[in-house]
Image 1 (cartoon, rainbow, N blue to C red):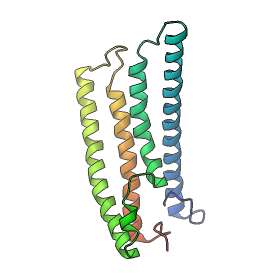
Image 2 (cartoon, rainbow, N blue to C red; image 1 turned 90 degrees about the vertical axis):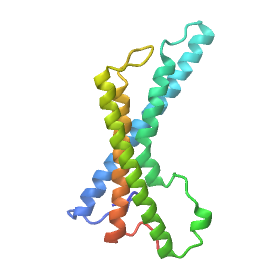
Image 3 (cartoon, rainbow, N blue to C red; image 1 turned 45 degrees about the vertical axis):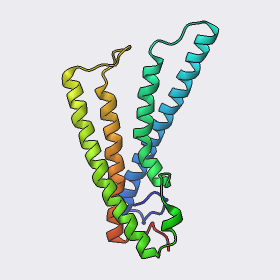
Length: 178
């Protein structure tokens, strides 16, 4: 049930969850990568259009900003699974294994609470923007779609944190090492 690829035998319930989480992580990673590539291509095309033909792409700053939000939201589960988040390894790695596991559990619980609230509030904010008919400045794109997508990224991230908390108590395939 964790990101590093160890699976239980086929037909076992944890393997199903592993497959679902891996699929969610990979799908969101692909969407984040596509958004990042879109940012790079759009920025490059805008620079080329400005420099060569003196014709910038209308609304490119808006689109790049939207894509940046999508990159952040969709890359959260992948970054979590890769351990790419900021940590205080210099201090924590000197503790005993049990102390490290308890610190990880507390960090995961606090993060789960925080990011769960962030996801909830993003959806509420998105509904407010939808009711108000809020659109982007130049292209007049509905902004609530972007907020909902970011909220979905935080929901997925929260699910991965919940999975880690469950692992702490079930001890299945210990992701914390020997």
